[in-house]
Image (cartoon, rainbow, N blue to C red):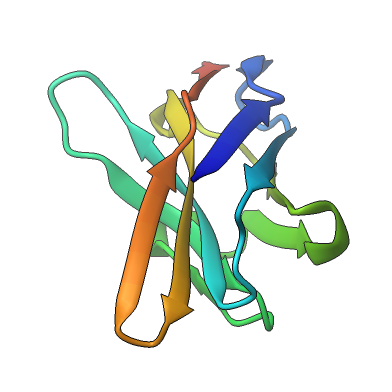
Length: 120
């Protein structure tokens, strides 16, 4: 079992910046991917960015060049630095981890979400 606790959301003006943090605790296997998703009411949850334990990253096209995902494996923490924020970035942001105890088994866990609101 893995628990995820997010922090860092809030209200920011368009063009501003925020940094989200997510601390994972519990049984965290070395083969894992940590990610940030976001969701607005009535819409599907979408991937924002993800990063494997060895540093491979993937970003949604809408955030490339503005958002940066990073992680501190020693602290089991993932960060999302969000620059040049736009009103359309407004959403609840969820931390996610997928752990793979074996190559054929994967478990997925979610945080409770943190609200990011960008005012125009």
